Image (cartoon, rainbow, N blue to C red; front, side):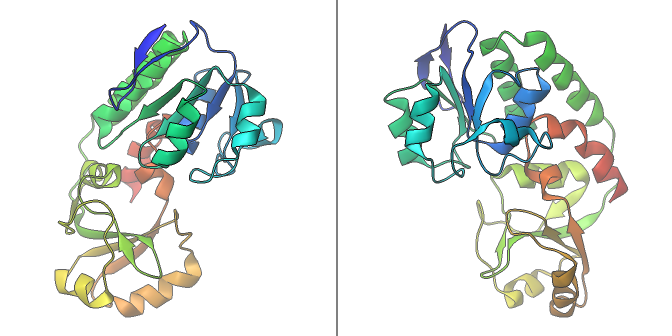
Length: 252
C-alpha cells in the first residue's frame, strides 16, 4: 500500500500491518481503541493508556530517545510517529530501515485527518470512523466563554503554550482566549505573565507534572488570577482521548 503521511512523505506498507511500533502516547491509545492491541508490539515508556497496556509490550525508550536496537529486534512493518513529539534525527534513522508514518498536528482537523489515515492504513476504517464521529459530536456543543488564560507546561524555566500549537486550539475550543501571542512554547518570566493580566493561569499535568504542591506557590506568584490545575492529556492528546475532552472542558 502506497501512503502519504502528514509531512507529505510517501512510503510503502503492507496492506494490513501486523507489527506496529508507536512512538507517541496519544496515538498508542488511539491504535488500541481501534482494535489494534495485538498488532502493537512496541511503545514508549510514556504510553500510559490503556492502563497496563505497556506491560505486555516492548518499551522502546522515550519519545525523544529511541532504543534503536529494541526497535530493530521487533522488526516492525509500520512505525507511527509525530513531528513535534519525536525528534527528526531519530525518525530519519528509523525511516532508512522501516516505513515510518509521521503525523503533524496543530488543530482538531489535523487530528481527525490523522485518525482517518491510520484507519485506512490498518484496515480499521470503521473503528476509526466511530471515534471520529464521537469527537465531532462532542465538539459540536458551544462552550461558555471562560476568559483570558496563560497555560503553563513547564516550571523551571516557566514555559507556556503559545500559538501554532494543538494546546492553543484546545484552549480556544474550551472557551479560553490565549494571551500568549508568541509561537510554539516560549519561556516567560513571572513578570511577563503578570503584565499580560490573565484572568486564569492553568498548570498542566504534563509534560511537567504540576501538582497540588505547586498550586499555592503559583497562587502567590499570580495573586490576581484564578490558578488551576488541569489534566494536560485533555489539552494535548490528539487521539481517542478527544472523545473525553469536551465533557472535561464543560466542567472546568
